[in-house]
Image 1 (cartoon, rainbow, N blue to C red):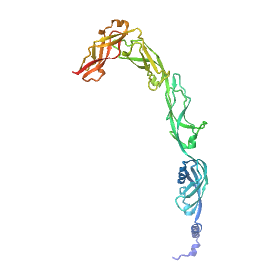
Image 2 (cartoon, rainbow, N blue to C red):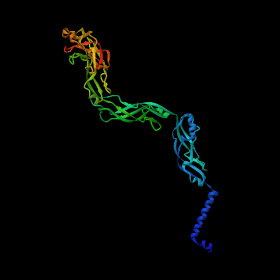
Image 3 (cartoon, one colour):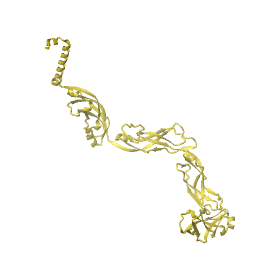
Length: 419
């Protein structure tokens, strides 16, 4: 079939498409041959000047760091072939700062420049803004003690508050040297709105202040830790009577045989409420009855349970016994026997008599006391049993005679055998 071109040009639809095709061809010729380059402005380019290799190379030898202004968002005016510029993004552009004029810490306005980061074939004509302000300083690290600031703390009658405990006690702060040197004190604060009757621990951020009491911005500082525990110890007061206990009370002796005098009859203490309530008195120690002699004074250090404090600052208590009307005498003991002997052993006492036994007691008892009234006992359960001869301690008493006892230390020889 023969095509008639004259008729095609009479067709309006054909003429419309033909004109469009000619326009596209003309545009392609223009942009590729006559004017191939174009300009464009790329916005929203995020820049971190501190990480640029040129920044590190210049500032690191000076022991300086960019502490403010390192991050910026800029625009770049670029020029290049249309097909390249049309596909560019902010990541294709390398933005650096001119830092060669920096020699010490301070605030500087630095010029920005850009380049083709990956060599795609375009030119960066301008960075907007042309300059940015940065602050450089040396990096410093320092330790500070942490103090506490407590508001509204009250305790009811019968309670006391002890020293506030901050844990940990120190904070390590790293940042610009000028900022670190401004720090005068580090404070952890707590506010209480009701009276306390027990220990209370709260968590608090650490606040920084200069010498004039102004709060310091922490945004450029690194802190370890950033918060602490504040513990307010609250203790309950109680007056505890002082007591002691006897060791080796002789047989036949009344349970509380002697009048005595304590330098302190009671001590006011304070401790955790749940612990204080468990105590009705304070045991200062033990008295070996064989050590009680005329005019002997016992001295005990005051030792409190863990967590208690001594409100009267009494560190020692003396104990003396009323022995003014007591008399003494020396005796020989022949009634010597072993007690608590295991069933599979036998014990033979080899010592026939113990001489020079010093006795002390009430006058009317001592007047009639004889050696026959005295018994020396060797408690075999006080040691590990193995066969053999041993020189063992004895306890001497006057059973059923009343307030009379032996003072000093005495021994006897025994032989232990298996049955």
